[in-house]
Image (tube, rainbow, N blue to C red; front, side, top):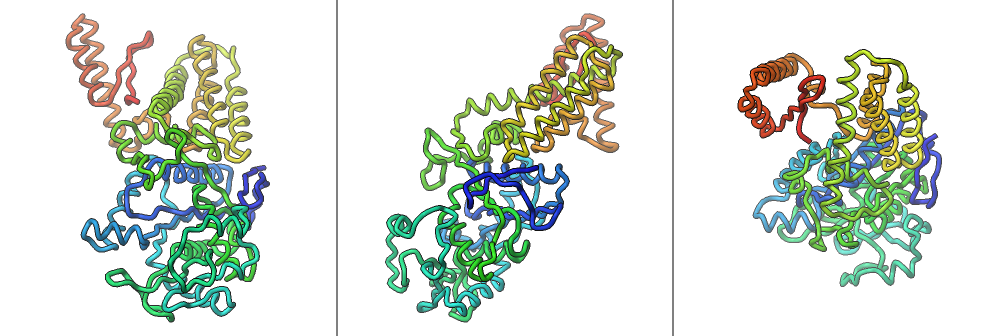
Length: 472
């Protein structure tokens, strides 16, 4: 039984999907006016992990992640760069896919853009106005928060709390301080679309409501995002969507990951204390960054310093080494003294138990490292049956993959004729180096080893012969 923490109810609940065996998930995607930073990446990696795990547990997952491609920040950035908003958004969407791929974040089943769903937004706004939940004001349209009795139920804020914390809005056309824009009147030089209330563009919150309903329908299973979206973004989504749906829930479960902090302060572009993922990828592999991001439970804050990436690289290499040693040892005869079959089964149970408990990837890591330790012990002692050793190695690799981690050497991942050619080439190089060592031609042997290392290929000499793998 999978249990997850529902922000709406503030407790863990059994995951009971809208349709048996299926999971419909909407995760708020980026506003594409810049490259995404490590704090953004945490949300992307967390919900990618959740998607992978649900798939592994047998669910048919429909995962949707949007792009906000029209927004005040996009308009301002386009002016700075001297380009159209469409060109700016396209540039950063392309960059997003490149950086996300480096973190092994799978593409969603759909990546809708706000500008492609204006008609759906206009329809929702029209219905809200007909129900008296929204009002027009000289070309703008606002949602009347005081007309929605449940406002604040996600964030737990009272009307007084929200009013006290509201920014001063100089717009006198708003009836209430917490009313928010559904449609914004066009300003000179800004992108615009026609509407019954005049030319303009959508507000931010209505975009996600329209896209989520279009692609997943009402009362879909999980709505996810970073903790900073709880208020006002998700609170406003709930108000306008449930108003549109006559009280029917927008989503069954609301999930939010905690922030990444720097010196205990939230990482954000506005604070200037952020690290772009593409800058980190110049020094660290995407696998290491992903390993670091999943090493702490998603609802716990994660304070950043580079030493944690060093530790992540070492931890990931421990898993890779255990898998590699097991694969090599499985090809040699052994005695059945250590029951690695039961060890693998125990690791699978521990991993599943951890992930079933609100996707606790940190505890799942413990199951992986316990299995890696037992594999290393068995290999060192030479007392595991080859078949059981291979089963343990396969289990380690499979469970790591559920988290989006690749621990097998690259040659094992390469399929087809090209992969076979590369493996054959490496076997030839190792044979040539072995011949040089046999003739005590250490200069040539060391030259081969060092030049391959420069190319990211490590040759390691063992009592059983040389082996090679990609450098971590």
